[in-house]
Amino acid sequence: MTDRDQFVRICECGCGQPTRLAPASYRRIGHAKGQPVRFISGHKKLKYADTCLADPCDGKHYAVGLCQKHYSRQLRHGNLLGVRPREDAVTRFWMRVDKAAAGGCWVWTAARGDHGYGSIQGDDGRTVGTHRLSYELHHGPIPKGLLVMHSCDNPPCVNPAHLSLGTHADNMRDMIEKGRGRSRGRLCGPEVSA
Image 1 (cartoon, rainbow, N blue to C red):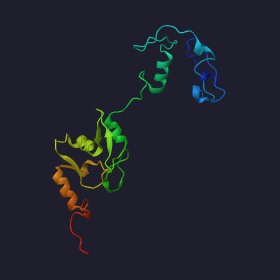
Image 2: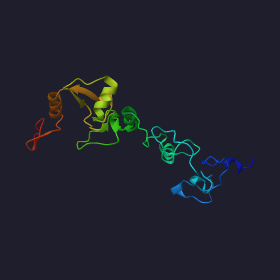
Image 3: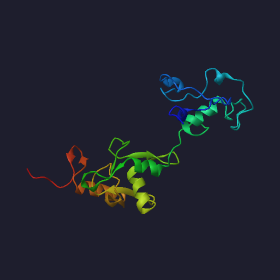
């Protein structure tokens, strides 16, 4: 077997003849220089056979069993729907968490809101705060009326060791004790003597 023989590809129209190697790259039709092409020149336009195997398509197909539309969807996306497969929310969550940040924080590296809190689209299509999702993954469901508070005061942090539950009043008290808020134009919290 020669090196050239290992690159032989059978024409996808169903004629059974070997195709040629592409002399140059032509991305629009999927040719890569030195790689076998999918069809022998002119064979793509051969007569169609039976109907497409994809339900409920009634288009005519090539020998591969799929019409041109469904065949190209299968090549591009790996399915006949024409959409990229999407991972569940938990998988997408862990793909965007940086555990190597300073201070032991696990920093959310993707979408953030105006105040720096991360957000992700859940499996049900609703947007969820990433700190809330992290808390639920590690500690269970969040009771109604409670908030997830950060002990590290880092909004994009999703480290479950830095998260705790509390009421709105607890969150405001924590903010005032740490001197993070503003009230009527001046800092809240302990008075600073000048």
